[in-house]
Image 1 (cartoon, one colour):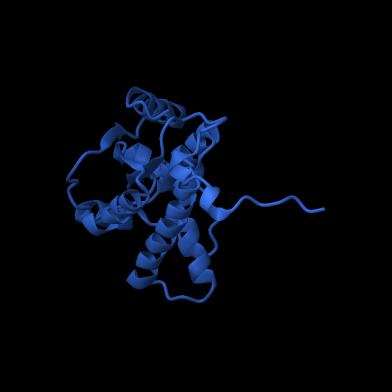
Image 2 (tube, helix red, strand yellow; image 1 turned 90 degrees about the horizontal axis):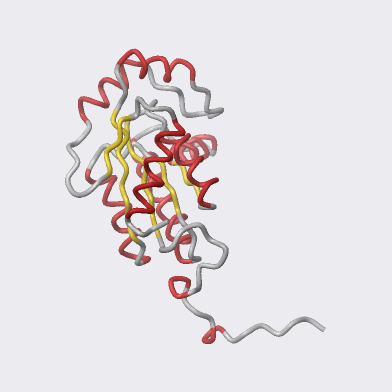
Length: 199
């Protein structure tokens, strides 16, 4: 005989479920931001492994959209942010820690995550990885391989142009010098989460 399911009205909302076997203490949306080549994806993936969270990457989603035939334009870029927002909200509703990595170079892009946090009642923490010195930044860009089929790696000139148009950050964010090794960046973010009572 199949097990009986509890009535839906007896189920607790995700935000009220006990966080059993978790390495974090609150519902958290952690957004790792910065220019290409600052280590966002590596840091987000390492944190997700350490904290048993869900890692969502804008570039991975945009790459899938391009592979499905969408044009490589601003509309597809915005759609990738919205798709990741929807996935983030769904996982937050399930009580999971969500870690997003995205360039977030405009106020409009950053509002995506503010909206997601407001919708789910999650605590939002922005982390901005400040670019390392030019020599190290160029080395990282030249050596990275992300296995994306449709999102090309940016040239140094494209990264410089994006840096020049990067909108000033308004509101709270944790700024970290990305010249440090990935392990040090992860540790600094983990310390900030723990200090805020979130991990």
